[in-house]
Image: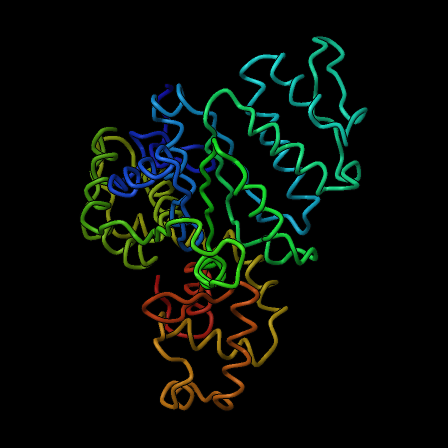
Length: 383
């Protein structure tokens, strides 16, 4: 493996030496899927669930040798047809490394798409050249894909990221369709990962829903502050630099342990710390300010599309960071909000749009950097 110039990796799969902790979660996840149990992996967005899955499955020699793994993210999908397309693409891509004969076998199994595939002009190997419009009957194609998976020589582990997205499809029976296919598979374990906790828990805990009691639920929270501070300091030290503990703790608390933003901050701070020097508070603050600047246009446009009533509640939540009960009279009065009913309505809209999420501690902005941006504009700056 090539040693990265900056050990705080962004935009690429993180290998084990650059992945912080999660040992207990990794062991639990591997134990579940290798023993035939499905897992619902729930965490706020950018908390590291995708990196955890990658490290657990791709860096495990046992899993790589004994299992076939498929991974696909459905956050951007809006229909069963798009889901089917990405599933087929995920299977195709995974089979490419295992030989042309396997790829041809898979494509032959997709009878509903016969004639839609192409071939590379130079090598003659099949290509997944279908378009979304080619999937005219997704339920048939989906059945063909799952039938192929059932015939896999090795047991299968399939990871579907942002699984709650299927509840937003116009096909109202999507949950039942997928549950029926998954239930019939005798050689596959599934990881249903997602960031919308309320929706996912409803899907798997409500006895009236198709996926009821079909998987064990694993919640992924922030890593330990002490472990993270030591991890970051060690990565600096391995490259001949020093990182003070307090700035690292400040970053952790600023983002409430959000893995992505801590990683992004440390990536910038490391880049601004020459070899043989010390990374202090101003360096990490400068890295955060750089992130704010690069997201300013996006955030301003985003906020311009939020109604005045919702924006008032959003700004109030940003100031308080986490609110146990935003419907309480004290919260409404202190932030000069219109009424409890208006807050309730605004809160429902903000949660539906993904701007606000709920945890055991209460309600907060889903994006901690957006919280910092709002407070810099209208309240007390945090940076």
